[in-house]
Length: 298
Length: 286
Image (cartoon, rainbow over all chains, first blue to last red; front, side):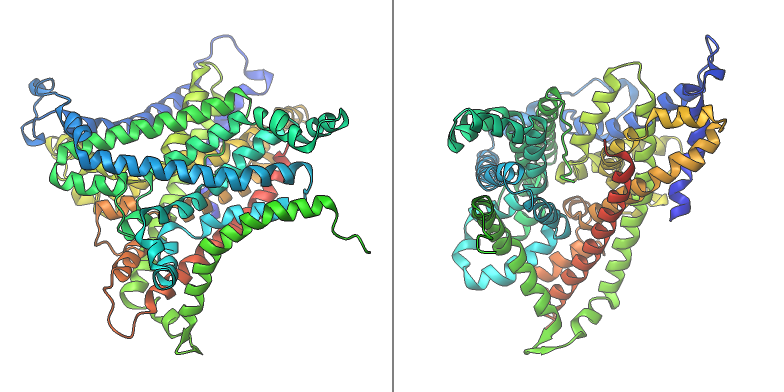
């Protein structure tokens, strides 16, 4: 494995060279490296764009692919499938449930993690390794594994819990833990929380005043970033909801698509764009503060 | 000795306890119950279920899932690293860096139902790419590039694996200081030698760590695989099969055993990844 992973680098290395030592700095070299880079980026761009365009065509153009010829490329387009999907009462219901789940998961995470992140940073740095280890756990136990444990335990001991749609909330909060903590921690590091805290305290501010008037207002960007990433996760989570037989937006989407193929794809595009916007917002927000967002939570 | 619990430590405990209790109740407790159930039968220790989980159809499932995860980790890892190298080297259009960065944050999270739909529309039997290649006289489904074939699944997974690799290797690439390259050049090292002696040794742990993360990510992926081919012989799909009550009597513990193996596999991959990450940080931490 080592051999395969190292392979692309030597190929890349001679190409990298013109940028560095002065000997290659003639005025207008046909910069091969640049050309290769652009070719590669273009190919990847096509790879990322084509499935989305194919889905959009299927959803919004009512010409079956078997009958699609170049001259029919621009006929039969309409956004009716999307309108059908968005006026479907069950879809709206599922969307409302997903949004509620997202809001509750965000709240749980923020309530648990904001105090913890602040105290860890300014008072108890010893908690840091514990937090780092715990926030790795959701990677170790993916939804598909945890759902087995949850059925084995809560189904017998607390059936009323699993019967409720809100039983999804703690688990969604759990999988959002890693990047929520990363975002909050990055925010605290960036404002030099410990120094700020000590300065405020030495000027006579109480602990609560310091937290609410100094630290929290400065953490707004990371809080919003954490919230939007959590929302994106909840809007896309399928495995857990599906195996616990809950109807959320993603699980409804699969059923809906079976009855209305084009409407299902239109709805999928709608959800994709929504997710992309939500994540895009949080990336922008963090970057404005010079922070790099960790959407992976690592 | 007397005042071992300082006010600071007490505050730390106060905020850490609800968090740890939350994680213990909803994550540790179910996992521990499953793991214990997987090694006991009627109150006695036995590895029978664990062995069964790696035999027959389920063993095949593990083999398939591991091969799929390795393939997408290596291909996605190489392509993602190349993406990071390409973007890092391009300084001129300023938008390119931000665009690829934002897009990767989005695409690395897209492994779900909508992604599966998109690829069905592209490379499914009625897909537009399938049709285009048909017109050129090539049946891509014959090469396993269909949503239900192995290579089709690889292509779909690459859609979120490449951006994920980009996100995890970019910090390491940014840690390669230009001064090192200049120093090497001043001392007369060729670029090739610089990469062989400095660049690659520093990037290797980050690259391997990123690939391990991709491995974990692909192994645990469920939604995409389920929508494309619910009956496929992959571990996550087999877990669903068992969970929905399709068990022969006497094999109730099989699901627990499979989950135990999954957790062991993912945990060891992630531990190895953190170790490699720490080695990377030694050089690239600012």
